[in-house]
Length: 286
Ligand code: GUN
Image (cartoon, rainbow, N blue to C red; front, side):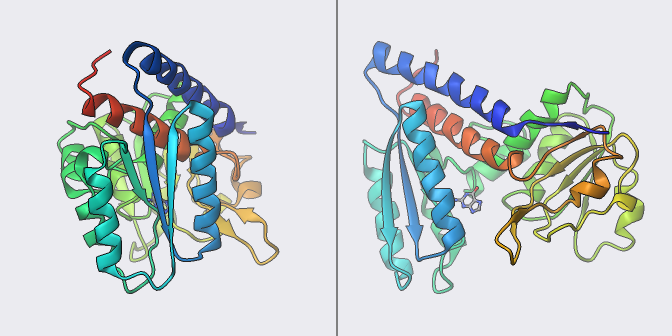
């Protein structure tokens, strides 16, 4: 029987810490962090994420500005908005919700965001900083996963860590963060041959595949820590992770539920990054 890793509680703790520091920032320096959230089009999942990000801003005491643009927005129009937000002294963090509609090149948009306001840590400058282990912001989902692993008390150093998925948002930076903590890291993906033989070696297994119930019981070592980054919407409307919870839970030592695992952590880490960005922009070190 695995112990559940309570992402709701751990994210609440992170947000409470951000709330306290925000209050101090207001009292001592008269500064209130502000996050601009940009959403393009009508993707229902993106709408839910954006609403949750705005709610979290309210909870921790940030200002939030939403820019909801129509589905047929051009790349030039979106770039213009990003440039305006880059210049706006009242905005500390900029987040363009992904995916964007197909006429827009997301890489160009990410590169247009000022690295100092890039609270997703997607800009090449921030990605490079992460690569060399000298960063201002950590990408929100991998940073949240690290908090969840740390909450178990399981040591990462020397452990076999397997990440399934190689996306720029999760898989690649996740592997880098585990490596920084001296894990022995393997990244698996759709072309990996005999995936189960690799995942079965993992002391720490992170699934970021985007396929419901992909990780089955036979793919997991007895006693592994299993982190499920998946958020898959089933036909019946239910949310389901990448891990087959019923099969894997009896074998794991610790496991994250979906919902209530990684999801809330991503938003909590976004709040942390926005606070960090605000402090950096105002040269505040306390
Ligand atoms: N879409 C899915 N996850 C994310 C995220 O972490 N940041 C942004 N900007 N878009 C996303």
